[in-house]
Image 1 (cartoon, rainbow, N blue to C red):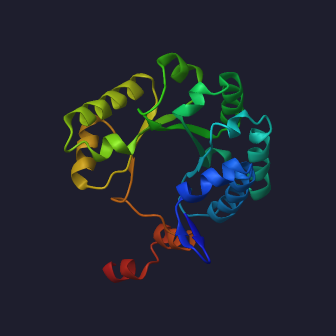
Image 2: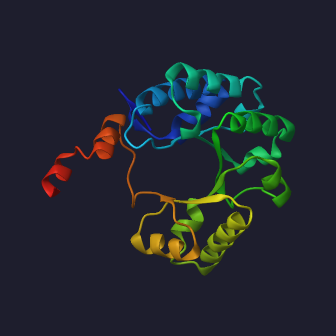
Length: 219
């Protein structure tokens, strides 16, 4: 999210397409990565930092070098960075995508396939690319309770991921019922409003250190 000084809170779909059309997306991505690495470097518990990369960016032969340069300059450990890509990368310039993902993976960066289930993945491509995990698309997760087909698809993705030795994260988890059902299916990691909403870096530090006022009252 971008808290614009004049337009207020802007969501990614309001400015990311414009940044891509004007060829500013890679510069914006790298600037945000540098800031995030600097902020998150000393966070308690060493949590992962996730970064979404567009398919077009993965065709840039310099991308992996620029990312590694930022990690080196900020002192952020490569194993704490997770690059997220969508299934659209599998229909782009596949050789370029494979080269860049392997370059990132070789230095210890984790690679996740985002929004899985809505695109073009084939088993052969999943095996060729160095994915560490798949993320079940929120459209399946959020309709599980009302749509049996969505529940079956989610369970199928979980079973497929486990058979390939990949980690699994469910996106868009907003209720305890959904969380419990995913756990029964074998998915034990989720993200969504049930666990937390987007907050500033300062608020994250308060959460990680247990320094929020309400936490002190409970204690």
